[in-house]
Amino acid sequence: MGNYLYIDRADEAAALAAEWAGVARLAVDTEFVRERTYRAQLCLLQLSDGQRIACVDTLALDGPGPFAGLLQDPGVLKVFHAARQDLEVLHDHLGTVPGPVWDTQVAAAMLGYPDQVGYNQLAGTELEVELPKDHARTDWSRRPLSAEQLHYAAADVAWLLPLADRLEETLSRRGRDSWAAAESASLCDPALYLFDEQGAWRRVKGAGRLEPPALARLAALAAWREREARDRDRPRRWIVQDEDLVALAVANPDSRAALARYTRLPPAALRRIGDTLLEVLRQAAANEPPTLDVQARLEPGQERLVKELLGRLREICAAAEIAAPLVATRKDLEALVRGRRDLSLLQGWRLALAGEELLALAQRGAG
Image 1 (cartoon, rainbow, N blue to C red):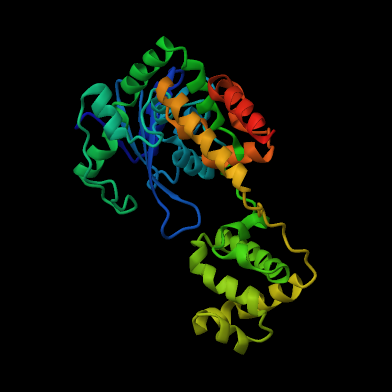
Image 2: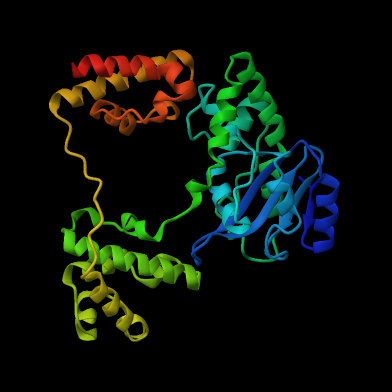
């Protein structure tokens, strides 16, 4: 695919962004790496208006550059496939979520495809095109990019708009175009892409096994690690591994020698952050432990009811040709059986499709 522009100069970016001002929609994709940094490093931004494809070198431009305005323009529809990660990366670089958005993966799941259907499979089935696959795991931060890499990147947006047209036509024929629009719009909620350092402990493997005093210490340690990783732009695990955080929270060491006994931190790290870790542990003694979201096990009757609801959900979705996980998960149905009613299953298009019937079944089963 040679019919793409490679843009690594600010003047070229500004010229194309100006030409695209006012377009109705753009196909968007990103290439990024996150192995060595706290935030994902945006390496390439691919855009297409259906006529031209641009592979924008965001490392050379130090970000999306002049295309940031297009990405944030409420009058320009941004078409993605599997938008969630792309939106997270762009949110970190723009400070806001691009929108409005239309996601071809979401749309496809409403037409009977698996909820995680890949772009290659979808384009192959709907448009009978075969896309390159060789560079899915390439290091996009290395320069120069090869012609093969750029060919792969350009293909990721080359067929997005025709694919969206095909899916939207089918959705409209089946009365589901508003469903896809609503579901895609929900991806633009900024809360999805914000991370609360006070809740960082929830990401730590093994947190749920700790007693309250140790959990309070872990919460303080995890919040400190989050700040440190963010400020130094390093992966969390490069600051302190999860296993070491848990060991410190349990042992509550009070000296550098004890820190060395209970962790695998190298001597250089102990010299640099040892006193800080001890101070965090000392201050945590006055903290209230966070509340664990621990649910009691379902009673046998409730478990049977969840299985009945799952079975009925699959029947409804098979008949409607829609991916069941998009409608509700097992976790959703467990919450329904426990009495929760603030569920997406009981709102919007999901309520009409399956929610009303599943709620009635749950209430009869509980009675």
